[in-house]
Image (cartoon, rainbow, N blue to C red; front, top):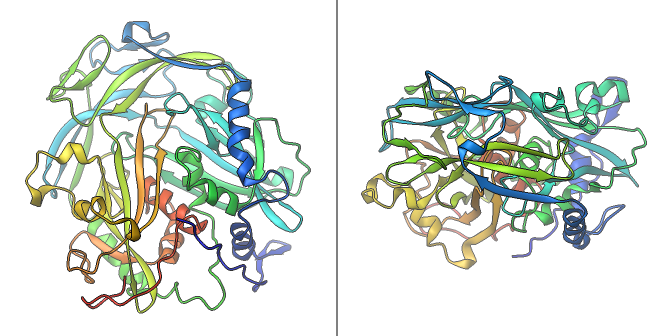
Length: 488
C-alpha cells in the first residue's frame, strides 16, 4: 500500500560536533522525505541497475557434500566444523536452558564467530541532501544472490585478508573516519541472529564524508527515502543494510505527538532489565553427539526434520574479494514471520515488542518483534504453547496490513533464509490487550530508535522493522477508537 512521504521538517536547533554544527536528525528526515529521485539514480531505475550488475559478473552457488569442502573439515575429538586457518568461523554444538516458553532446554548446532565485523554506510551531502553509498553485493545464501548492501560489509578475517583476496573498498573510511574528514553519525555494536550465532557482534556505522568520491561501478548513491521505497520490494535491501540504518537518528516532524509514549523510557528500561534477569544458560559443546541431531554426507540435521540444517556450498563470485570458495551454511526448513503489531494510544502510534530469549545473544534476551518464528516449527504444539499473537498476524485482513515484504536474512552464513516482514494494526478485539501481557511491552518508534543507537537492545529482526518505520516505508494507519479502550 502506498505511504505518504514523511513531512519535511524545517531546520531545527543545531547539534554541536566538535568545531562543526550539524542538525543530523533533521538532515536525515529530509533525506527520508525524498523518495523518487535524489541527485543520481531514480528509484525506479535501481532494479534495472541491480540486474545489470548481476549480469556484469559471474555468480554461481551449488550444493556440495561435506567431503567437497576445501579448507574445511570436521575436527577430531569434537566433530566441530572448522577452517584450517583457525579463522572465519566454526560450527559447534550448543546446550541451552531457559525458564520460559514451551522449550525449556535443547541442543543445536551454532555458528561461533568471535570476530567483530564492520557494517558501514558512507553518507555524503549532494545538492543539500544526504545520500548513502550502497553496494550491489553478492552473498551466496541470498535467493537472488545480489542485493543492496552497506558500503562496507566485512568480517575481520575478510578485511585482514586471511583469504588473500583483494582489499575491501572504502574500508579505511570506517577504520579511521577522522583521516578522511569523516563525521560519525551512528556507531554501535549490535548482535546478529541469536538463534544461529553464538554471541556474534558487528560494528554498525554511518559515517559522513565531505571528500569527493567517485563510486565504483558496483556502488550507487541513494537518499534515505529511496532506500525506504526499495524496502517495499522483496529481497532488494539486505539484512546488514537494514540493521545499520536502524541506528540513524531520524527526526520526527515538527509538532508531531508520536514521540509521547504510553510508558516512559525509564519504565520501558526497568521492565526490560527485569526480563533480562530471567534464567538463560547457554554453553558451547561438541557438535558430535548432539541429542536429536544426525550427521550425513550432505547435512547435519534434526531427526524430525524441523528448524534448520547445516549444509555445504561451492561459490563462484566475480565481484567479491575472492573469486571462488567453499563454505558451510545454515539452511532453515521454512520461511519465517517477523511482525510488529501496532496500536495508537491517545493518538500516539505504538508497537508491541517482546523480550525474546535467543540462547546465542550476549545477554540471552533482546527486544524483538511482536511475532518472530517459523510457523511450521510450532504447528505440532498445543494452541497455548504456540507463539502469542501469531494467529492475529496470520489472519490479519488486507486493510490492517500496513507493511508487507519478504526479506532475506544474513546471506553470508544462511542459505535461502527468508522472513515475511509485516506491520499489522491491532484488531478491534480483546485479542491484543491495551495492557501488554507478560513478556511484552508497548513502545513508540522514537523509544525504539533511541535504544537502537546503543548495543544489544533490539535484535536484528526488530532493527529491520524499525528501519521500515523510520524510512517511511510503512503506511501510517488513520486513527480510530477501539471499543476495548485503546486506539488502533
